Length: 213
Image (tube, rainbow, N blue to C red):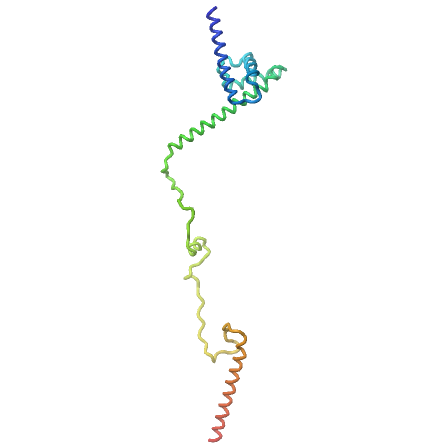
């Protein structure tokens, strides 16, 4: 009998130690929605009565709390008022464990990635990007890269105009404009008049000489 009582006492101490450790962990996480000191002991006792936490250390396992949630749900369907009251407290603890599990997995992934970074070699099969961020090209090179210019040698040049004698100029082929203003036009007309007058005088002089002879 003494041996049985000692085992029971040891089991109770072990359970209480596991529960105290779990309560300290929840306090450290600052879990909202449940009073850790006042409401957590009753929640754990109800779970033990429903067949959960037989092993007191399973209080830290998320799967055990999911099992406990199923028990509470079934009891709520049977109109168990205690189960309905404790449902809110169970959800607060369950969500805290779930959040911690997600954060733990994220931390493990970060540690694994950092380990891969330590073994990463700077030499790889792929070339590194160039150190400069700008490339300066000559204007003709810019056009060549765009495909919108043509080489100077390939552009046909206009054939030169044949020379034209002064006597070949007619009204249908006017003299090119030299860029001078219109004020030079009267000078051109006066020169032509003098030429015509001189030609007439020379013609009359020739006729006069022929008459004298």
